Amino acid sequence: MTTPSPVPDGSAPAASTPEASAARAGAYLVRGASLYGGERADLLIEDGRIARVGSIADAAGATVVDADGLVALPGLVDVHTHLREPGREDAETVETGSRAAALGGYTAVHAMANSSPVADTAGVVEQVHSLGRRAGWVDVRPVGAVTVGLGGERLAEIGAMADSAAHVRIFSDDGMCVHDPVLMRRALEYVKAFDGVVAQHAQEPRLTAGAQMNEGIVSAVLGLPGWPAVAEESIIARDVLLAQHVGSRLHVCHVSTAGSVEIVRWAKSRGIAVTAEVTPHHLWLTDELVRSYDPVYKVNPPLRTQEDVDALRAALADGTIDVVGTDHAPHPSEHKECEWAQAAMGMTGLETALSVVQQTMVESGLMDWRRVADAMSVIPSAIGRLPDQGRAIAEGEPANLVLVDPAARWTVDPARQATKGRNSPFAGRELPGRVVATFFRGHPTVLDGALNAPHPDSAAVGAQ
Image (cartoon, rainbow, N blue to C red; front, side, top):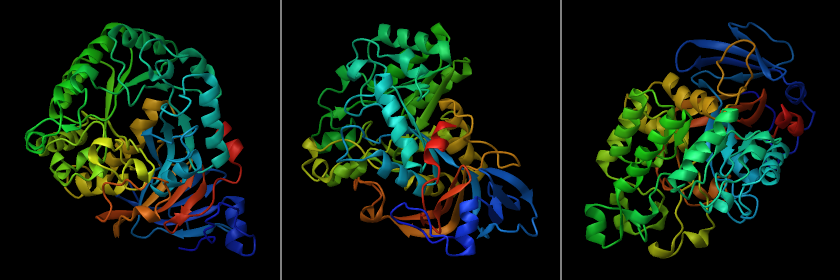
């Protein structure tokens, strides 16, 4: 690849070479990329858009990016990211999380509401939105809380957040279930006015009090309090019926059981407006790993059985589960490097998600790259109502793109990742696929697998 020199500190490349001058002008010629893993084509990127697609003999002044052997996909979109800021900057910031997202091939992320203060007012979501604009690595869209302080007692300022500069369209108490059916009904009714969606963390709290892992054979052997599948499934069953009753949109966060899959499948067969996500770790890891008592495997919802993993993979492949959401949940090391019972729940995921999907879904033959684009870009964009994301790789479309080397192999080293969190369940594992370049509105945030620079006009980008 011929590129400007990567700039680790995020400053703009020096204009000392023709390549740097071209990059500053925003012209890039991506040569020989495999579109969605299929036909090869050149892509000319100018003024933040894809100007031409096809066989392009020359583009004067454009920086040439050699994409031979690389798969081109629309920039990835995550519907479920924890950026922790404001208030929990020891775990992550919008800046560090955005860098991690760019390295993972993402051009947009939805920042969950469980910050401190909680994102339950227009002021807090606008703060998160502004931080994302200033960072300039990806499009950061805040998720608004459903209830005040995630307390589950009264609705948050849903309308004000929707009307704010952050233009919030997803609302969730993630980490906490909206367990009161009356409140859940009211939230579903409220978001209809502006085509929003309620994203439910399905966990009946009375069935999971003190739970430490999946309820099953392993929990019985280890003597750890179990987390039954029915605690998730009962809430999903209730909520799809509520969504049907009020005619509203429901999104189910991090589906983890075979039973949940069947409920979602039934709801879709009835025409209920429900979408569902699965995390990368639930597509691969099982509760057998908890036998090690390594807190890196402690997560909410918990790792389940191999039967559940197989059902989740099949459901993602056939479209019952719509999207892959990372549930990227970084924690300070002291919150994970402790005894199991005291450890925080959560795993990082932004920088490994695409590789895990390639490992579990593409290399297994369950999905092709076109379906990966749907599950990790097109459909997440539709759920979050992001008009400039998840678009086709075609002339005139916004140049939000990721170039992936599917033949590459790499070993996960959390210490070398951009996220502040070191709690990756894939640490030390060799994964397939490497993000070589990420283009955010025509600007390369990642080149040659390394951070290049944020968008040179970050505030303008965020305002679009």
